[in-house]
Length: 230
Image 1 (cartoon, rainbow, N blue to C red):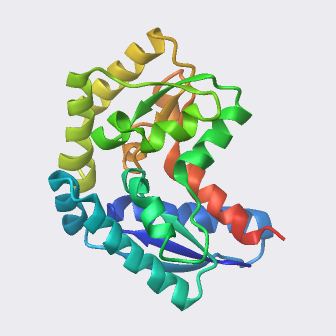
Image 2: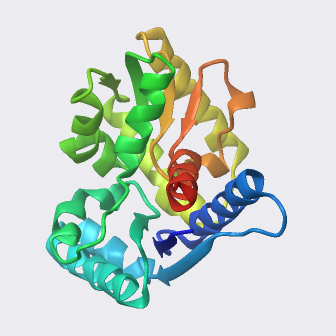
């Protein structure tokens, strides 16, 4: 079994979900008392979030590259960054290490193609929704990406940082998210990507008829399967 290097803490709530998913998949696949070999480097999210707000992506990339290098030295076979937004700095991180990084958007694109999704709604932080670093991974394989209008983008982003990352699950925010998802479905979305690792704390498949693609689950399952792949 390969050793998974997790870079977590962005936020720690979703990192807990990663740990749970990875171990559940390994147990299901291997049986018995098997569990995953995991090294976790959990960063201080306050420091990362300040870099995001200030547009200092290079500094945040340096912080995560240092974490990845520590995991590599400790014996990790590959890296999993437990957040969507910070995949913006994957090229910077990858340049500092020799082991591979499993890209969350590439894993999600694979799952969408398996389900024959050609047009998909994307919810996430404003950085993930507006910038190209994430969407281009989907568009490169022929998937059209729909995002909310500017007002709804700000609301989705607000809920992520001011509620979900703080451990708050608000019913009114859930209903607003579902309204936004329904609006994107009316525009032709065949599925919705929960493109922030916290959104799965608020929205589940049973909440909507539209197929839900939770990136935390997709990424965690991919990591587990790669770890046990012969």
